Image (cartoon, rainbow, N blue to C red; front, side, top):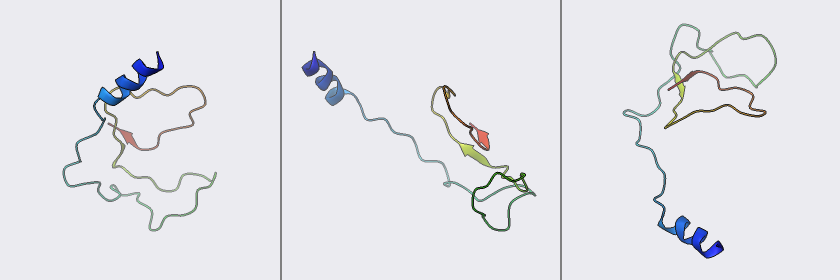
Length: 73
């Protein structure tokens, strides 16, 4: 059984993603921060209107997942 599992791993194609056209862009919108502060639990002062998470397939949040910030595509 272990040999069969190892063979499947060898024969399976490597997962990969196409690059984004133009790459990732800068912060978008009128509420971009002037500089990046250390993470904290204070109130939200600034935010990015750009896309932040790219998903190829299903994006599921389970168990103890905290959050995904920004737009999810």
